[in-house]
Length: 306
Image 1: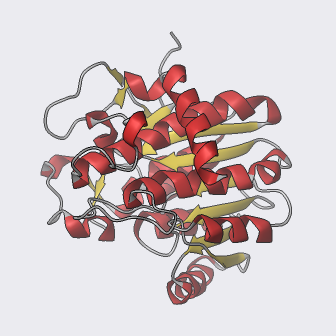
Image 2: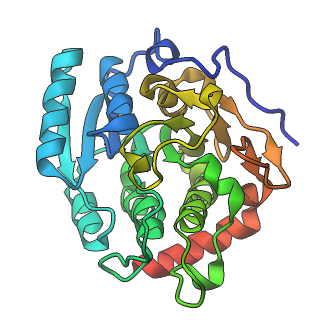
Image 3: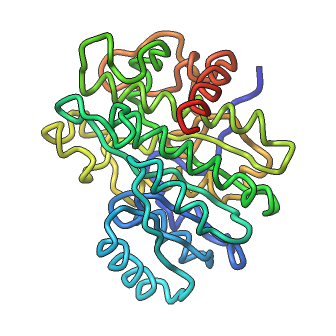
């Protein structure tokens, strides 16, 4: 059992605090959903540290607006946009085909939450699974060679404490045989993101690609539009700058050099849980780190995107 990684940072740390003294000049990053909320703050912080940042999103006008704002805020002119609809695997394939050159940082940040009714993606997959996991899986696999071409590339998968409440149901990922529940589907997709990080790291670490997952915490963004607002204790709520701090730690901090296959929250590695906690839980489910499940998910996902 490896020792949990701790850092000088904590629950209230911000992106700028985590990246203080970190210089990313010459590094290239993609942030999905980087035009709003956590994604915007993550993109802004990386650009502020000198990285060339590509904001990927399905709304061209929103992407263009975010690019303009981040350039103005940081003085970094190397920020651009990429049209990408994670709910459509054809769009993902087009986006990966357009990318040229090495990629140092891939932050799989975009997501949807608690879609009220069972909704299919363009390829017929349950929408939360399609956007939160499968689209990101296809994007990452499509960019694997670009990541391998960069020295010490990093993948950051955004998960959630919701993953603690359900693993992916491998025999029915698209709810064809069971009743749909919005939050259960969200939990499964976010658990899949942890498993994906574990397996990507296991398969690709030898090529210089490290992958980790994180829970940003409870932040009031557009993600909660279907949940009626935050249903979390006040003391667990964060600002966007605090929520994105764990993402940028995994993306760029030298404290995480050569670290992969783990799950972080509150800017440190999370404690492993063997039972679902009550209420708004913290920690990482033991099943989400299990290589048997991560390998199965990876192989199933490869079939789904091909």
